[in-house]
Length: 374
Image (tube, rainbow, N blue to C red; front, side, top):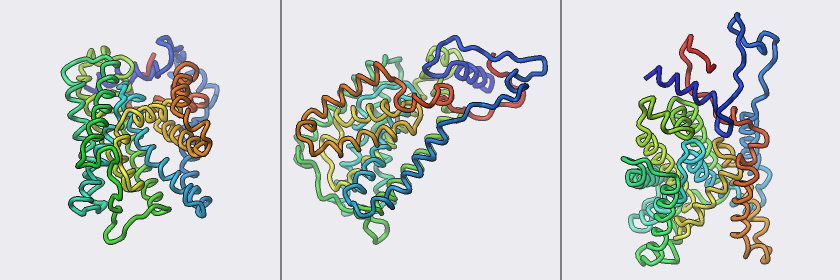
């Protein structure tokens, strides 16, 4: 297994996503050191950590600057919550190569569950409902993954259409189900409670959303830079090569798909509590497509890129919401934006400043004396 991991590491590091199969390899002299190291040439500045720190600083400073603007606090809270959805999609597509157009399905269903638990059982304790939403999201995604991914080698278009169909079917089902409010959705959702304290919309809820986003981000970051992340990277690049190394690709796909569903479920619960409403559109293809745009605009395979993409889209939506001539064509604009990204800047905003080799990250600890690629 260790030898297989080492060979896989060499294969992945030798060809980061987006680069040619033929990557020049540094010549190593008799001393065992590359010429650049002998001449004292420093490594290029790593941009991702700087961008992550900048985003963190903005998250901390935002409520201090916007303290008097309640609608802007609501906006940045929505950005933090929807960033969780975007990160979940990035884990599927950006790191694993699983194209899903149904990520909102695992966002909306847990949102409905916590709304019904609050309405019918009177429960909204944070220690109960948020873990419940995560379990629902994980379980539902696991069932979908078993159907779509396990025991077969599905094409990307099969997965995309399968998840899109599920998202659309769930939206139509809920729209006609009176028990869950039909087309009107569920409103007046019970406030999220921490002990006897109720979290209302404002800086308190923003702080909670940011803490959860930070924890999820750091957890996902550690995951994709681990040995598990190495397998995901290999899976995205070349499934046949992974099979040759002895890995069961379908098992890893089910695991990462289920994990992404859990993160989406957490985001859906937070969204329902923050908005006080959950509706059919929160599990439909529209929101699923937004998650795709968030990720691709910011830069897939980076984790921080989807957060930036979410912020850009949501801020544009807020700024242009009062302009009727633009608002009615907003879906068209988003579609054209997605097409433009795919055609002209597939690596997204971060692709302008972050290299493909840096995006791939550092996968686990290398054994002492292990051979370098090349």
